[in-house]
Each structure stands twice: as C-alpha cells, then as structure tokens.
Image (cartoon, rainbow, N blue to C red; front, side, top):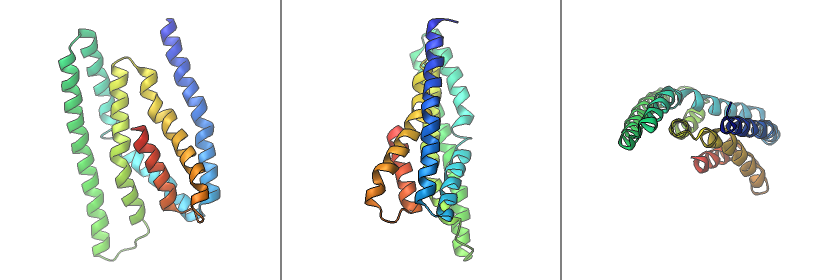
Length: 194
C-alpha cells in the first residue's frame, strides 16, 4: 500500500476516532438538557432526515464518485461539470418529491385535525433533508476527485464537532433548553458544514 493511501486511511480513521466521543458527548449533553419526549423527538428528527435523504444523497453518491473519477483519469474537466450539473438536478428532483410527500402528509393531518405530535418532527426533518443530501453529494464529488480525506471531513468530523460546540456554547443563553433550541444548534452546525 502506498504512503498516500496509508495517510488517507489514517486521516479518516483519526476523524472517526475524534467524532465518536463528540457524538456520544453530544447525546449525553442533550439527554441532560432535554426532557425525555424532546430528546426522543430530536433523535427521531436526525434519524428521519438521514433516512429520507438517502435516495438523493447516498443513492447518487456512488454514481457521482465513479463518473467524476473516470473524468479525472481521462482529463475531461467538461465531463466533471456535466456530472455535477446532472447529479444536482437529480438531487433536486428527489428532494422535491420527498419534501412534497411529507408536506402532503403534514397538511392532510392538519386538515383532518389528526394528532399533531409528529408534525413538529416532520417539519424539522423537512428542513434537514436537503442539507444532508448536499453533504453526501459533495462528498461523492470530492472522493471522485481523489480527495477522500476531505470528503469525510464535513459528514464525519465537522458536523458532530460543530453540533457539540454550538449546544455547549448556547447553554447559558437558554434557561429552558427545548427541542427547538437543540434543533436550531444542529441546523446551524449542518449549514456551516455544508
């Protein structure tokens, strides 16, 4: 194995090694700050937005990675731009369909005066889905360009680090930490890491 591959493996491993205690620390911190119901909703929002972002993010990530890598090896910079443009269109269509379905469910439940416990979760998830997808798409492009360690920086290290820092720094400003404040800190970390 070449030294550059070893460096990449060690870099990604180090990022994951640093991110694990940050993620656990964030979970413990939020569990202490939020009540049981709010923490459950927060965890569900993160899980739901990640799962619903899969078709637009992970689904096309491998295709983008392959096509960008082929364009790089052939020296075709026009093809790289074309792959980026087409993948972004696919990402936009997938996210639009997912968001439309979730909005229809949310509006129909409001119209029928159905239980509103999950509506807050759906609305917060709607906000995160496009951001999570774009992080994944960007990572695929960077991997295709041969920048594997850079591709993992945002999803693996930057997002958990910023989430932890934002939550910890915001504690003095929120007397009663709520789902909205926890989500706001996570959203800010996600936006910065995009």
